[in-house]
Image (cartoon, rainbow, N blue to C red; front, side, top):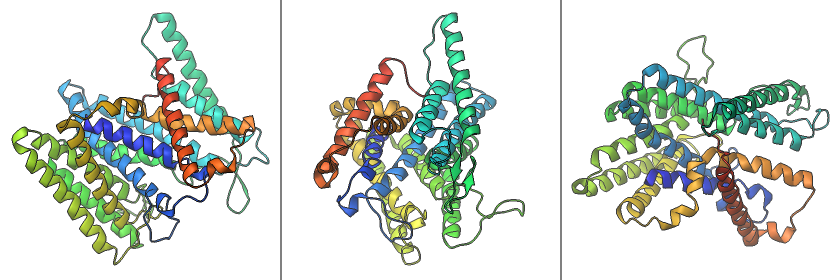
Length: 391
């Protein structure tokens, strides 16, 4: 239960901090650090927390598949299809950052609304109904695929030098990075399963890759590989494997007589992660954009501490009444993440503007909080009418 709450809290915070770009004169400690800046803002914690809880979910979801007798082929099919969906969405989001509104056939807001609509049409969790409805749902998926292919073909971008470019992979986008982290961590877990030692070794290996990369050293093994062939330079994967480790510890110690040992073990893991991160600060800056090991380890430490608090609050003290108001953000996470792409671009098309007073300082932060509540409300409304992305 605490994992679901963690996911919902992280998603709510992600929607909130993702609206900060509309604000001005807000405290620096709330914002992301700039590239090359030795700094860790509150916003820099959210993405690591999301990857951490992604990792935490893997042992429980895959153990259920193992217990149901699902074949390895079926499990890997699920992993690959989910990864492909995240990569496709991530690449579209990455490319719209370089959209050339001057020469493109469609205005950027229209382009974004169309691709987001396509995502919902292709990956919506359509209800099971009669044969006629299933044919309609299949047709909607096919139309969604055609929309995305059309948008891919007509895309016109512009690079940083102002040159016209087509649709390409400059980087993977946030969803694409999540897709690669999921593919690597989930695939690894299928083979290692519940071996805490095995997962710990893999965690240390990816952390080592991150240290190599942050030192400017290539981590390719074969000549045919690119120098930095793991998206996220190992650090993002380490966060997910850190989450898997915490879940395996939770599974082994989730008994009343071992609850103190659980707290001590998790707190010890958090403390060691923090101390190593602080030691490595003698060699690396703390920076999210650069993906430094200091950022990885300090973020992992904070994620474990946050989970300890939520576990005590939810699973021990049973203080859960407040969760129902944000639960949809945890159960319809991807839907909640994508709705802002519709919201912002519809707002641009409407030509409505927000008064400066509502985007400045504390009032601006409150505006973003109201916006977050609105997005959660829209996500809930979407779920009522059976619009909910599931991959």
